Amino acid sequence: MVQVGFEPKLVLICPLCSKEVEIVYERGKGSWISDHAGCLNFSVIRNVPMATEVGREGPLVFIALESDFSIKEAIEGLRALSKEEGDQSKRQKLETGIKRLESRLGFAKKNLSRTMEALKSGAFGLKVVSGREICAVAWKSGERYFGVAETEDRPLKETEAILATNSPEEAQRFVLHWLHYWEQGRIIP
Image: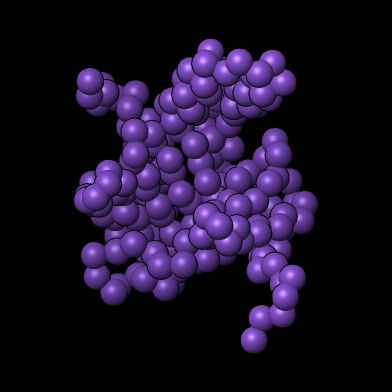
Protein backbone atom coordinates (compact mmCIF):
# COMPACT_ATOMS: atom_id res chain seq x y z
CA MET A 1 0.00 0.00 0.00
CA VAL A 2 1.30 3.45 -0.90
CA GLN A 3 0.99 6.29 1.60
CA VAL A 4 -0.22 9.74 0.68
CA GLY A 5 2.74 11.89 -0.28
CA PHE A 6 4.87 8.90 -1.26
CA GLU A 7 7.05 9.83 -4.24
CA PRO A 8 8.53 6.87 -6.11
CA LYS A 9 12.16 7.50 -6.97
CA LEU A 10 15.42 5.76 -7.77
CA VAL A 11 18.73 6.98 -6.40
CA LEU A 12 22.00 6.08 -8.10
CA ILE A 13 25.58 7.23 -8.48
CA CYS A 14 26.33 8.88 -11.84
CA PRO A 15 29.04 6.91 -13.66
CA LEU A 16 30.44 10.15 -15.14
CA CYS A 17 30.71 12.55 -12.17
CA SER A 18 30.21 10.09 -9.25
CA LYS A 19 27.50 12.29 -7.69
CA GLU A 20 24.16 11.05 -6.39
CA VAL A 21 21.26 11.32 -8.88
CA GLU A 22 17.55 11.04 -8.12
CA ILE A 23 15.19 9.79 -10.79
CA VAL A 24 11.62 10.72 -9.87
CA TYR A 25 8.40 9.31 -11.29
CA GLU A 26 6.05 11.97 -12.72
CA ARG A 27 2.53 10.67 -12.26
CA GLY A 28 0.86 13.01 -14.75
CA LYS A 29 3.25 12.09 -17.55
CA GLY A 30 3.76 8.46 -16.60
CA SER A 31 7.52 8.78 -17.01
CA TRP A 32 10.67 8.95 -14.93
CA ILE A 33 12.84 12.08 -15.02
CA SER A 34 16.20 13.08 -13.62
CA ASP A 35 17.58 16.58 -13.30
CA HIS A 36 21.33 16.14 -13.32
CA ALA A 37 22.27 19.45 -14.96
CA GLY A 38 25.43 19.61 -17.01
CA CYS A 39 26.04 15.88 -16.84
CA LEU A 40 24.31 12.70 -17.94
CA ASN A 41 20.55 12.36 -18.21
CA PHE A 42 18.86 9.10 -17.30
CA SER A 43 15.63 7.34 -18.18
CA VAL A 44 13.90 4.27 -16.82
CA ILE A 45 12.84 1.54 -19.22
CA ARG A 46 10.78 -1.09 -17.45
CA ASN A 47 10.17 -3.30 -20.50
CA VAL A 48 13.23 -3.63 -22.69
CA PRO A 49 12.06 -3.74 -26.33
CA MET A 50 12.95 -6.98 -28.09
CA ALA A 51 11.58 -9.19 -30.82
CA THR A 52 12.14 -12.31 -28.68
CA GLU A 53 12.44 -13.12 -24.99
CA VAL A 54 16.21 -13.63 -25.34
CA GLY A 55 18.10 -10.81 -23.64
CA ARG A 56 14.98 -9.25 -22.10
CA GLU A 57 16.49 -9.14 -18.65
CA GLY A 58 18.47 -5.97 -18.68
CA PRO A 59 19.12 -2.86 -16.67
CA LEU A 60 16.33 -0.62 -15.46
CA VAL A 61 18.21 2.68 -15.81
CA PHE A 62 19.45 3.87 -19.18
CA ILE A 63 21.86 6.73 -19.82
CA ALA A 64 20.25 9.06 -22.36
CA LEU A 65 22.57 10.12 -25.18
CA GLU A 66 21.17 12.85 -27.40
CA SER A 67 22.61 13.03 -30.90
CA ASP A 68 23.70 16.44 -32.12
CA PHE A 69 20.92 16.20 -34.70
CA SER A 70 18.26 15.68 -32.01
CA ILE A 71 19.65 18.61 -30.00
CA LYS A 72 19.57 20.86 -33.08
CA GLU A 73 16.01 19.67 -33.74
CA ALA A 74 15.00 20.66 -30.19
CA ILE A 75 16.75 24.04 -30.55
CA GLU A 76 14.81 24.75 -33.76
CA GLY A 77 11.56 23.94 -31.97
CA LEU A 78 12.40 26.25 -29.05
CA ARG A 79 13.42 29.06 -31.42
CA ALA A 80 10.07 28.78 -33.20
CA LEU A 81 8.27 28.97 -29.83
CA SER A 82 10.41 31.92 -28.78
CA LYS A 83 9.48 33.89 -31.92
CA GLU A 84 5.77 33.35 -31.22
CA GLU A 85 5.99 34.12 -27.49
CA GLY A 86 4.78 37.59 -26.52
CA ASP A 87 5.68 37.42 -22.82
CA GLN A 88 9.27 38.64 -22.34
CA SER A 89 9.94 36.51 -19.24
CA LYS A 90 8.79 33.34 -21.01
CA ARG A 91 10.90 34.25 -24.05
CA GLN A 92 13.95 34.65 -21.77
CA LYS A 93 13.31 31.18 -20.28
CA LEU A 94 13.14 29.74 -23.80
CA GLU A 95 16.42 31.49 -24.72
CA THR A 96 18.04 30.07 -21.56
CA GLY A 97 16.84 26.60 -22.60
CA ILE A 98 18.30 27.12 -26.08
CA LYS A 99 21.69 28.08 -24.61
CA ARG A 100 21.62 25.06 -22.32
CA LEU A 101 20.90 22.78 -25.29
CA GLU A 102 23.63 24.40 -27.39
CA SER A 103 26.13 23.61 -24.64
CA ARG A 104 25.21 19.90 -25.01
CA LEU A 105 26.33 19.71 -28.66
CA GLY A 106 29.15 17.15 -28.87
CA PHE A 107 28.54 15.95 -25.27
CA ALA A 108 27.54 12.38 -26.22
CA LYS A 109 30.53 11.86 -28.50
CA LYS A 110 32.94 13.43 -25.97
CA ASN A 111 31.78 11.10 -23.19
CA LEU A 112 31.19 7.98 -25.27
CA SER A 113 34.09 5.97 -23.81
CA ARG A 114 32.84 6.56 -20.23
CA THR A 115 29.23 5.72 -21.12
CA MET A 116 30.40 2.59 -22.95
CA GLU A 117 32.21 1.52 -19.76
CA ALA A 118 28.90 1.91 -17.91
CA LEU A 119 27.23 -0.23 -20.59
CA LYS A 120 29.95 -2.90 -20.31
CA SER A 121 29.40 -3.08 -16.55
CA GLY A 122 25.79 -4.13 -17.15
CA ALA A 123 24.56 -1.66 -14.52
CA PHE A 124 23.28 0.82 -17.13
CA GLY A 125 21.93 0.63 -20.63
CA LEU A 126 22.28 3.36 -23.25
CA LYS A 127 19.35 5.12 -24.89
CA VAL A 128 20.31 7.03 -28.05
CA VAL A 129 17.91 9.73 -29.17
CA SER A 130 18.66 10.04 -32.89
CA GLY A 131 15.99 12.62 -33.71
CA ARG A 132 12.96 12.59 -36.01
CA GLU A 133 11.21 10.11 -33.72
CA ILE A 134 14.01 7.50 -33.88
CA CYS A 135 15.42 6.05 -30.68
CA ALA A 136 17.85 3.17 -30.07
CA VAL A 137 18.59 1.31 -26.85
CA ALA A 138 21.58 -0.91 -26.07
CA TRP A 139 22.18 -3.00 -22.96
CA LYS A 140 24.19 -5.93 -21.65
CA SER A 141 22.54 -9.11 -20.42
CA GLY A 142 24.94 -11.75 -19.16
CA GLU A 143 27.89 -11.74 -21.55
CA ARG A 144 25.90 -10.50 -24.55
CA TYR A 145 25.03 -7.04 -25.78
CA PHE A 146 21.62 -6.32 -27.23
CA GLY A 147 20.22 -3.36 -29.07
CA VAL A 148 17.01 -2.23 -30.73
CA ALA A 149 16.30 0.89 -32.77
CA GLU A 150 12.69 1.94 -33.35
CA THR A 151 10.76 4.74 -34.93
CA GLU A 152 8.18 6.17 -32.59
CA ASP A 153 5.73 7.29 -35.27
CA ARG A 154 2.20 7.24 -34.02
CA PRO A 155 0.15 5.04 -34.34
CA LEU A 156 2.72 2.47 -35.55
CA LYS A 157 6.04 1.59 -33.99
CA GLU A 158 8.51 0.16 -36.44
CA THR A 159 11.73 -1.69 -35.63
CA GLU A 160 14.67 -0.26 -37.57
CA ALA A 161 17.46 -2.54 -36.31
CA ILE A 162 18.24 -5.32 -33.83
CA LEU A 163 21.64 -6.18 -32.35
CA ALA A 164 22.78 -9.30 -30.48
CA THR A 165 26.52 -9.77 -30.03
CA ASN A 166 29.29 -10.79 -27.65
CA SER A 167 31.48 -7.95 -28.93
CA PRO A 168 31.62 -4.66 -27.01
CA GLU A 169 33.16 -3.07 -30.12
CA GLU A 170 30.13 -4.07 -32.19
CA ALA A 171 27.83 -2.66 -29.49
CA GLN A 172 29.79 0.60 -29.64
CA ARG A 173 29.45 0.71 -33.45
CA PHE A 174 25.68 0.25 -33.00
CA VAL A 175 25.53 3.19 -30.58
CA LEU A 176 27.73 5.35 -32.83
CA HIS A 177 25.61 4.53 -35.88
CA TRP A 178 22.47 5.81 -34.19
CA LEU A 179 24.25 8.84 -32.73
CA HIS A 180 25.23 9.84 -36.29
CA TYR A 181 22.25 8.39 -38.16
CA TRP A 182 20.93 11.68 -39.58
CA GLU A 183 24.42 12.96 -40.40
CA GLN A 184 24.81 10.11 -42.90
CA GLY A 185 22.59 11.60 -45.62
CA ARG A 186 19.35 10.07 -44.37
CA ILE A 187 17.42 13.30 -43.90
CA ILE A 188 14.05 12.84 -45.56
CA PRO A 189 12.08 16.00 -46.46
